Length: 99
Image (tube, rainbow, N blue to C red; front, side, top):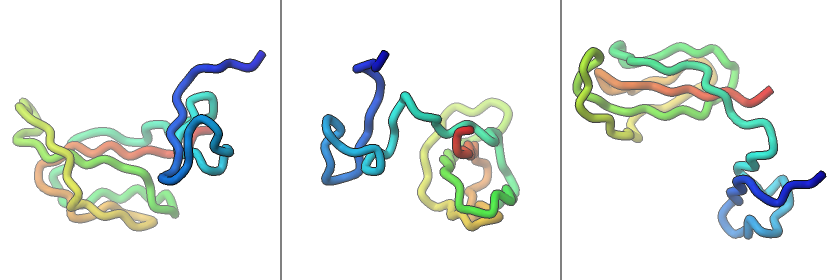
């Protein structure tokens, strides 16, 4: 049975209504990214050793124990082994490909 609902997000320039699978960024009926790591980071870098650049989100915050705000930052950069330029303190979420 084929379902006609879920989430489809297409690449820029493609319509999610009729895009081929290769032109979609997210298709909820497919395997999705899973959370590999989530937590506070205060060292300025995080070693992940995934051997590829991960999808990640880095949020600056005012405290690791009682934060009152989270703000997405674009300062952090990734390589195939580390995420660097992480503001101190930050909350880091690293995703891995679905299985």
